[in-house]
Image 1 (tube, rainbow, N blue to C red):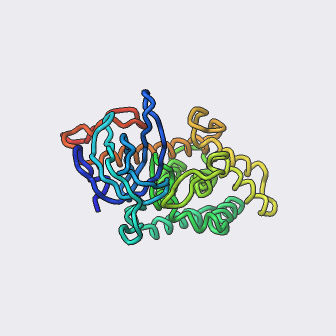
Image 2 (cartoon, one colour):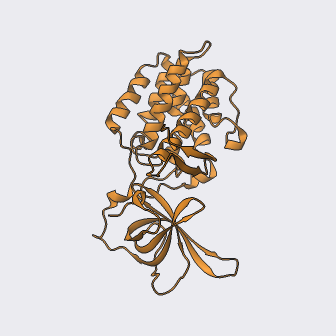
Image 3 (cartoon, rainbow, N blue to C red):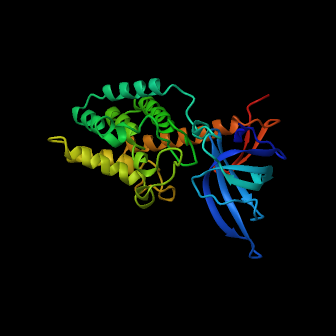
Length: 312
């Protein structure tokens, strides 16, 4: 199979891919064209069908399709100009080739995260985390396999677990670095900060926003999970429940980044910084994996800057 990560400008590509997105659009002159988003386990690529004719057979979003196209560069990003499309037939493709997955040992990641849960000394905090992470069937069954995002960072199977553990490790370190930080509160909310993504995003191969994801979002869902879990624990302090929910509601930091609240406790602020750092550094890491010649990788739209390899 020809993987998307191996595409180079002017390559002719004839192979099978998952159609993640399909839009019928019109040019300024009123001509109909198709805008697609294709995926395999190595990534995604934008694709355009400029000539909708008999070589473009019927297919729908979510189908596996066989395409014949040419790799071009548009605004510094690779893009496919597709000449032919048909639905893939059963047996022509292996679904495993279309599910991006962490290259880390999921069992080891989960064992490390579980060890952090066991390290929590406050009985109320410990019980709440266990209620959500281990006893909620939706979460317990998905935390090892879910992605952490649709496109931005850790957008692959196991990405949620990888990101969650990384943020938890950063927060654990930071809890001992500064005064007046409640470690249990910080570590627990690090473990739970993105748990709402289990409900926000569908599973693979779709990995797309659910209705609750569109209407509520993982931040609100995460705060709801804390409120619901606290209600199941006898004598759970209302003040502690609010402090934990606040960290979840504030972990995107600023209103313009989709955060319902700005961080108002030291734990909420550290969590925001840790989450932002892990996400952004992961974007750098993924950029640097590219096989670009020379020192400069190119412009990254999300990071809004040119990226350079550290070579000298």
